[in-house]
Image 1: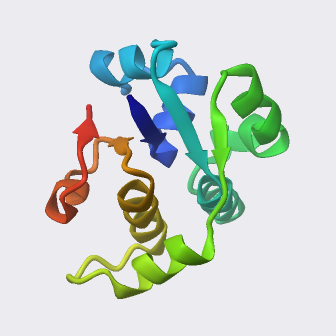
Image 2: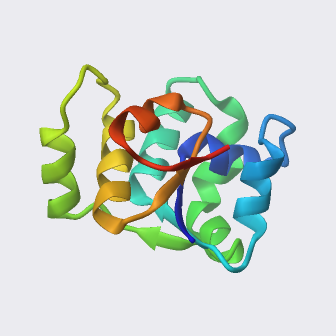
Amino acid sequence: MKLIADTHALLWWWQDSPRLSSSAADALDDEANTILVSSVSIYEIGVKYRLGKVPEAAVVVDHFEELVRDSGFLELAVSLKHSRIAGLLPGPHRDPFDRILIAQAQAESAGIISIDRVFKSYDVATVW
């Protein structure tokens, strides 16, 4: 299965947090799954770290690329197609990071590993 890891799922995975559900952990750990990490995730983590919202993310900010690689995950860059889809998404959801992830999931025929229920409003399969 092809899955995009939402930003909080990545942080909780790398921090071995009990907040990560067992289903999400199993999906991230299953070598049969292709886990994609959007480039928007490091942007989101960097912004939230800079604003003091996730002070525990210092190691993730400094070693993001290594963590992605060492976890066996694949980088997913934000393309022009992803940006177009995100910009045209209907609905009131205003979080630009989520809108990019929704667009990427739709364009790449992928699900999303996330606790955030908003993805289901956009007909994106979720694992949690």
